[in-house]
Image 1 (cartoon, chains in turn orange, red):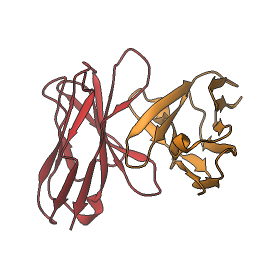
Image 2 (cartoon, helix red, strand yellow):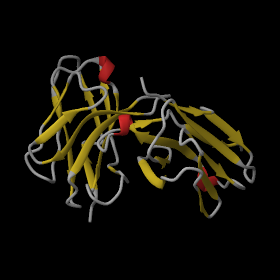
Image 3 (cartoon, chains in turn purple, red):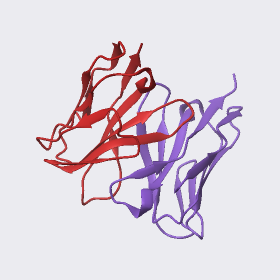
Length: 112
Length: 113
């Protein structure tokens, strides 16, 4: 069945270091979304990518959608304590307008 | 606007008990959905609705019922709680005609003993 794999599961970084999470789909996606969930919180929408090869930036966050529309990445430059949380990717399940299939998330942990 | 409101925030049940998780949104969103989140896993869709009177199953519907009598409310019923239903439950909504962005409630942490 359709799967969305997200790696790594955890990433420990020193504050100021960069962070990257990767999302790989078993099928071509019409779009991909990224969400952030702070500890104890709920997922909050960050961005949606639609076009093949699309790159979007939000301040220190850079989102990419692969040329084949099967993979995506989120890169954070110079992490800050406010970046702590779990980052999820999600794409349409079987091209549905109604259902998303989610990656398992990457937890960003800032080393003390 | 309050957005998406879920109650209760925490609940402990005994095996076999039933209960209803409440979800209400004040954004006039047509689409509403319920997810469960388990450690190390992404969110999994339980049920969803695209409007009043219309519901459908998601990935993990067994043991749960829903109904949608109004645009605002989308309750999730656990018929006979089992320990496997221990999880964090999120309600989410979105407008039908303005993109895919989901708005989430703050969640309900459910423990079934």
